[in-house]
Image (cartoon, rainbow, N blue to C red; front, side, top):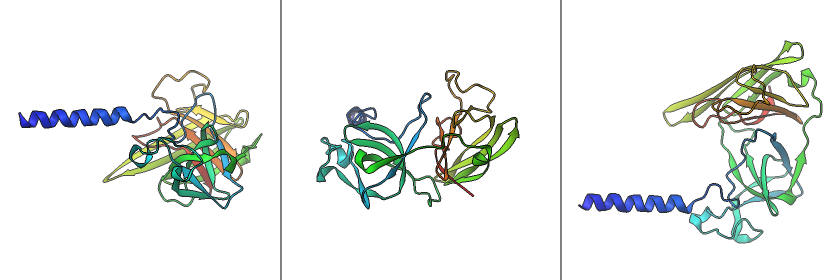
Length: 237
């Protein structure tokens, strides 16, 4: 009987906690997400030497209900500095949900949260990258991509990404041939399926952009094992 009651109480507490947290709450910033119709955007931290992240309502053990807001109580300790680049998500009032990864990290370690919109300057992608702007070896924490000319204006994209998980490793790979269009290289799986076709599920969908000196890669999370993603800013080797 005692065991049954313990199990019941644990189940009740678990259900209550799960119900209290809402990942889809518009005030909750969980980072960027994939959108079939809209490519990712990049912004640069500007105007201030240091910009602190801003809390979501569920921070501080669910005690930040008034956040995000421009108050001391909503200011997180984590911060970015001028010229740091972030991947931009949705906006809410005066704040933008972003994800940041240090270009010097050895593994994929992301920091996500709200930043003041006024502290972010949009970084425009290259309008019409030439073939040489794409090709080369591009590196990113946990892996990289190699892009070569494939003839007829097409590119061959091959890459691997590894995510350590305790004593195990999750990995993913990309091997596709695709043609740049309107400043983007977008493909599904090996590139033989038109990207414009509606998502059929369990497909590896990828978009590439050239942004400044970087290669911006984004995927839909279906290009490898659990938690594996190619998304991020890649540096040319």
